Length: 264
Image 1 (cartoon, rainbow, N blue to C red):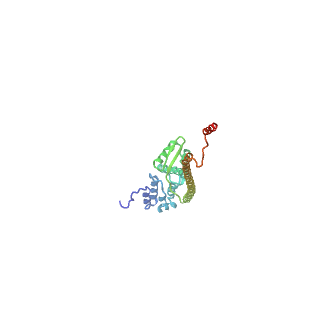
Image 2 (image 1 turned 90 degrees about the vertical axis):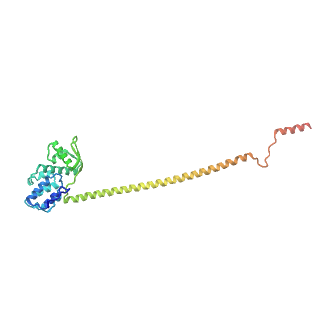
Image 3 (image 1 turned 135 degrees about the horizontal axis):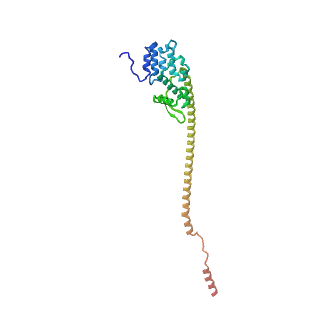
């Protein structure tokens, strides 16, 4: 039918569209519906719509405060202000407890059962674990139960609505992260510089060693060649007598001359 809101992938969107035409009791009924609606865990956009903002100072202010509590608060906040807020249905109570688990998961990755029992106002461990399992199945958190050590180990949790005063904290956190990244980057650059210098030094040393090895090889080759030439010349010198050299007379010739003299 004409005028009816079209289905959207964002489950909150249909409530935002309906809120534009709702006033007074109809708007409070819409708030009750959205707080019970499965899959809706953020409420900031609806809270900022003009018609909902008008509830803040009127006779339906309690419903505005309740919606504000689901957007930014926790179950202990509800208990602290229970007297001035509408009574929660079972679905709303469980959803607010789910959101409380998300808030705890955003601050710590291992949540002791003792903290969960206290913040969720629960006494029974089995009921606590069932509530945690429900939260895991709705995909608002991912993790596992450590029953032996009585811990909820968190791997992931959704983000909740942000208040304006949270923006400064986020900016500060991001700036600190950027500063840390800058320090890490500077350290990496220094390491790269040292590695490059070490590499260049090794290359120069290797080149020097290669040059020295080549020179040694040349020297050894030249020495071996000279030695070979000397070896070829020395046998000829030994076999060929020098000019003017006379051999000494043999003893036999002396004896012959002696015999001849005695005969005369």
